[in-house]
Every structure is written in C-alpha cells, then in structure tokens.
Image (cartoon, rainbow, N blue to C red; front, side, top):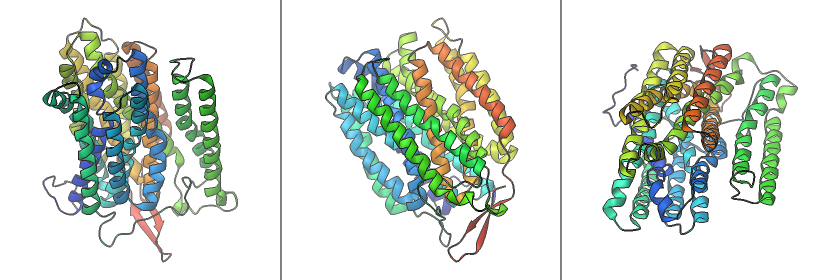
Length: 488
C-alpha cells in the first residue's frame, strides 16, 4: 500500500475514514454548539460571569471519565456500536440543553453533554484497525483534524442559523438542528461500517476493568498517572463550591470529594486485579510495552488539546469583551482557530510519519511554547488582525501536536488502543478544565503564559523519556498463534 491516500475514494479503508471523521465532526459540533451562542444565552438567562464560567467548565468535565470508560468499552464492544450509540444519545441530551428553562437545567444538560466528547476515542480505534502503521499519522490526522472542524462549523453556522430562525427562540431551533443531525447520522453510521476489514481479527483485552501493564514499575506509574484524572474532577467541585463560585454548598462539595476518592480507590483495586499476574510471573519480552510512552503522550495531549478546548471556549467572548465585536463577527474570527484543524492536525500526522514520532513532537512543542508566549502579550491596543494571526500560529503548532500524539498512540499496544486513546484523550480534557479554571482567576495574558510554560515543561519530559516506536508488537489469536504487527 502506498504512503499516499486517495482522499476522493469512497471505497475500502477510505470509506471508513470519511464516514468516521464525519461522525466525529458531528459529535464535536454538538459538543461545542453552545460556545458561539453563549452571548445570546447569557442575555436570555441573565447569567453572571461566574455562571458563564460554570457552563464552560461543565462542558469538558464529564468527558474526562467518559473517555476512560468509552476507551474500555470500545476495546470490548467495537467502534461501530459505540460511535452510533454516542451520537444517538447525544441528540437527546442536546435537545435537553436547547429547550432548558432555567440555569440549573442548562448546567445539568451541559455537564451531561460532555459525554459526547468521548466519541473521539472510538474513532481512533476504528482508524487504527483499518490503516497500517506507515499511514497511521496521516489517517489519524485527517480523522482528528477534519472531525475537530465540527466546533468551527458550530461557530460559523449556528449564530447565522439562529438569526435565520429569528425570534427569542432562534438559538434554541439552531441547537435543535444539531440534535437531529446527530440522531440521523448515528443510525447511518451503524448501517454503513464494520469494525475491521474483512478477514481481520479484532483484538480485545484479555481482562476488563483497567489497562494491562507489563512490569511492577509500570503498574505504579499507571496508578500515579490516573490521579490527575480524578483530581481534575475534584478541581471542578472546588470551583463550584463556596470557596470559589458558591454554586453548590459545602455539604454537597464534601460528598462530591468523597465519591471521587471512592471511585479512584475502586479503580486502583481494579487496576491491581487486572495486573495481579505480574507479581508472580514475568511478561515475555515479545509482549512487553513501556507505560512511560502512554504517560508522556498523556501530558503532551494535556497541552495540545487542552489548550484547544480552552481557546475554542474563550475566544468568542475575548473578541466581544476586549475588542467590542458583535457576537456573529466574534464567532467567525474565533472559528478560524478550530478551522486550522483541517490542515494543522493532518500535517502533524504526516510530519510524524515522515520525520519520526519523537522528533516531530519535540519540534512542535518548541513551537507551542513560543507561540503562546507571543500571544500572552495581547491587549486591546493590538489590531484584531494581528491577534487572529497569533491564534493561527498557536493553532498550527498545538493542533499539529495533537496530530503527532495520535500518530503514535495506536502503535503502542493494538488490543488496548481504545484504552490508551481514552486515557490520552482524558488528559486533553484535564488540560481544558485546568486551563479554563486558571482563566477564571487570571487575565487572558496570564492564561496564555501558563499554557506556554506548561508546554516547555512537557517538552523537557518528552526529550528525556519518550521513545520512538520500532519493530513490531505481538498479539495472540484465538487459536493461540502469535500475530506480529508492524509499528514502524
């Protein structure tokens, strides 16, 4: 198979690529359909700045555990059923948000809609099944980049669609359109795809409940790297508690902390249960992998996708509040950032395929650090065009970095691609939640500095610990024979 893909083809693996990135596109359109309409929603419900901040944070909160859970489920049940189910369920959650009558209903619906962001993980496994290692970068880049464009489509289309419907409920009808689209495509996707090419084996984890690791040190690292996922949820509760926004009372906050701690401890027990064999026997070298690869990719995606989530959420209001632009104009200018996914994320994947997984990430993270430190100097005296150019520079490096991260993630261990993609993806949402929380306390300039400095720290860890995938990984077929899978 050649390195180049025939993007105009609708046969074989290209049909799977196109139908799957469209599914991801629609899921992202639903997930971020509130952002370009937030100024209208703020006016209709007379929301305070803190209430707007709550909605933005809630939108990325549930996606954190959802990506872990969906990653496990897709490895066990297959991407066809999972993606279809996510789209159909999200259509009903979208209708709930669109026709909410109180802020409490808005907040609950927005929190639940974070679930749709887990759809991304499903497509990573699907594309990984249909494309060889030498094409994984460009295929995953096209999937992620073109699918991410869904948030830009919301920013560009929904304000105009709301105006077209007109009236006080125009925004509600615009959101309803995205719900109908998600429901319809969920049915179509189920009827149109298969989990693997004909004759291929869909490898499933040997055990369910946690990721399999191959050494005691990796087990410890896995447990430690699970902490920030639950810590981010605790941060959300703290943000909503009397200490900060006072949206929930102290008793509710303490109950929330206790539930999060209990779930984390339960997960640790499941992880140990799944990996208990490593205490009594050594895993053969043929089946080993290093969990530090997953750990570094987790932190890399925290920066790349975390910064994207936060910028997609905050840029429309930044243009309105700092430069006095209209919501429609602000939405169009803000949409340029996610629009860059069409080019930047596939380019990051191609760059990874050609230059190497580690080297490409190092170069892109150097660019992320520089670009965000430049953007941190923005203020109202800047020309809007210059600000837009700076956001484009940030998009090129950060979205290219996301493409490079997921060019490598499917190459670590095939049968656990969903779980690895889920954990890496969850860290992206951890980044979004943390960065948006930082933004609620500091100026936009400081917010951009925080992202740039975080990228610099991750770059240093990457240079020290990340290793280039080489050779082959091994999976065991049902008849006991070993199948080798190229990763370079």
